[in-house]
Image (cartoon, rainbow, N blue to C red; front, top):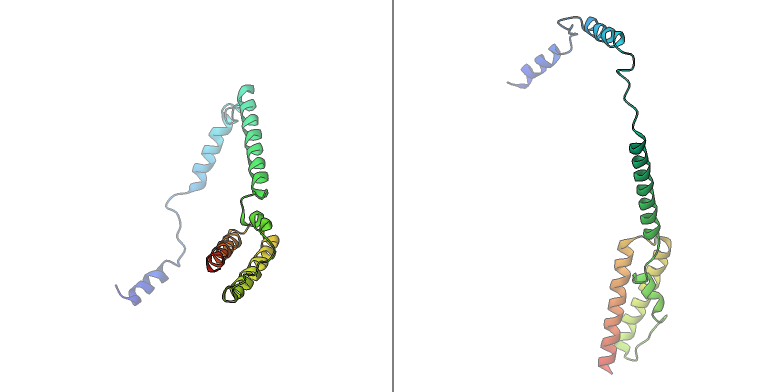
Length: 148
């Protein structure tokens, strides 16, 4: 089948198509049958009181769980990089001039990351970067201790 035949078949689908039989008669008959029977037969049965109590208790428990989880996630744990960064000294300058430049750069990066985390405390990317920066500062302190 080439494109021209495909387009000809598509044009043929644009014509209106009548159903083979009248659908309204069947719909009307079904509605009449439902209306002539017991009027309470189509209504759903009421839930027993015990079932209603279980549904209410389940709904209350799920709302409590959702609220507790939301409150828990809003708290900043003491092990986050933001909490540990507050415990570190503000700035540190090694006596070795070769390490002093790196210490200044890492300290500036840590301060900028702390300001960014104050604006977006739930950002895992910023927390990972702050943790990495603090590990690099710890390595630098270790190197300074070995150097002299």
